[in-house]
Length: 306
Image (cartoon, rainbow, N blue to C red; front, side, top):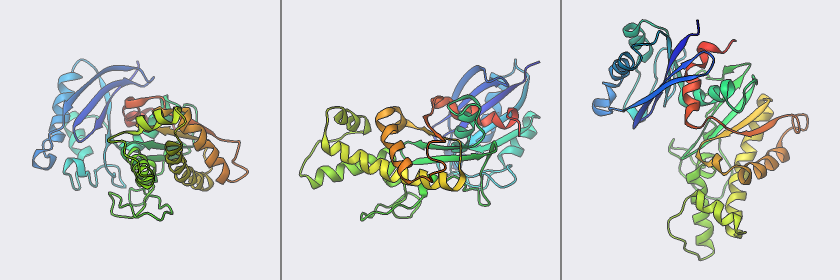
């Protein structure tokens, strides 16, 4: 009999749920609003209640939860989730006691990495570097099918690799010139804004979609913005690859939707700085699972063999 699992993607605005079987088939999806009142104290019970209501006709073998924050070393608690108002929260034990099934907690970026390894762009691989480019830069590193979580639950914080720059961009973490201040969608827009200002141009409000449209038309200033974005990102990825020597680099997040215009120059930068033995012996791919990556990854620990 095929086992079924409930995947939970816990966000600050919406909590997304999916019933997924051990073969990777999505049986059902639904979502509820995230109740962040009173520092999110009602969220654990809300998760239990909606699973009981929506999965009452399915035998559930386990629950996997992707969390926007670090997970404790024992995997039982959320250390901190700022968007939810949580400090240390023993989420796994609470839900396991109420539903009487095993519960796995995974950092949401790590969950997306696991999802791409199990059912996405890195299917069949065991060693990957996953980078997500959105409002920030996140990621996960998987070696021998195991997430590198780190002693302080901070492994794979790719977005906070320091980069060299004459600018002084303050990151949300409090540090200066973290990678995500340059190579995220927000960072690329900020770079473009600076280039326009330096050239005495004003183009009003715009997004990275506009920047790539300008690139298609041969806009030299947009090209400069892309060059800066991929140079800093490519150097960082090359440094990671030179450390872990993974099989594949997977790029996800909203900015990855640009496809080849982003990935081709990024590959060139990585190859320029990567160790010669690795160059030509790894793959750079665009993520394929989109918003479902976190759901697949949340339950991957139940179904992916060590």
